[in-house]
Length: 143
Image (cartoon, rainbow, N blue to C red; front, side):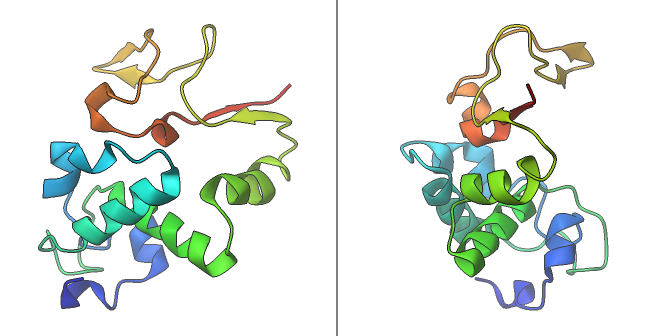
């Protein structure tokens, strides 16, 4: 890890103020997401690689959009709580909200899939889409 990232706080990671660049050399290539079946393995590999990138700004000094901060925060939560990201989401978010049917992965037909280029996405996301893991396509459907 680069020394510039040592003082970064959890709040900075979750508010796009960590200094991590918008697209790291690893996330941009997509290779970091391939061949890793679990969120934990993918996130751990990404956060180790991303923290080698030079900061786009000094931590805390500017807003720089970067989803990698959320992955780093997820790895921290997994290690601190000794539980998987999926288990933590179920226990800490979905269950308290009364969401009884929640899954991780691509949405099914008839469920919202977000927008791309200002238009609704209609195709099912796959693990090869833009080189991102399926955990980015979480679904939260309450029945």
